[in-house]
Length: 116
Length: 111
Image (cartoon, rainbow over all chains, first blue to last red; front, side):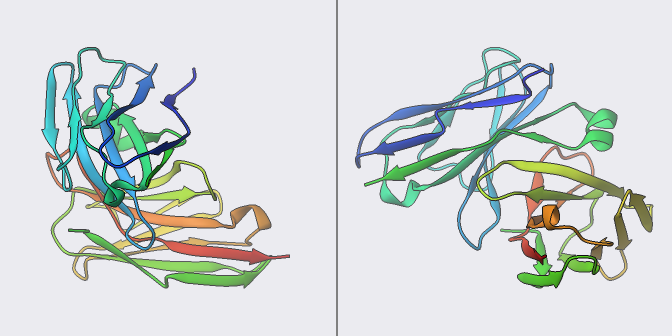
């Protein structure tokens, strides 16, 4: 199993550009989420999904869109990039309920985004 | 806002020593989890402790949870150079999928 795969690993954008960060998992996890990690601030939840067709906002959703058309994929779209969105982005997935409590969350290796 | 806060922010120890870090949180939880992040990598799940548990072990890891004080500790015994990483606590509330992370403790193990 590949686990959680994020692409690209690195990206530089100009202010105002849009792009999509890809996240795919092959573990049949119902739950998927996007976090951003900034120095000294830990991880903050952007958006999450509890299954195909179901998404909801996290702690810092402004400037980002998501959709979940399949169980496997959960792309994150930056609509109009701003320097404040410079960060490392992580996708994470897990099983629902009991299995989630036993196994925790599986994280991707991250996308390092710089907006200039 | 972040639910958990780790203490200390940074820790430097000699190989073979024990490393202890603490996590405090604000609201009632269903479980508390600890994750490790090596430099430039994603987070790896280490251990989960439920709100009705007080202590849990996994290899060289020992986690305690005191729900009355809303705090947890992670002890790494007989540390190795490979334990050099950042460690994060994360809390989950009952019936909620979401995890809230603290800012992490950076541990450096000197050879």
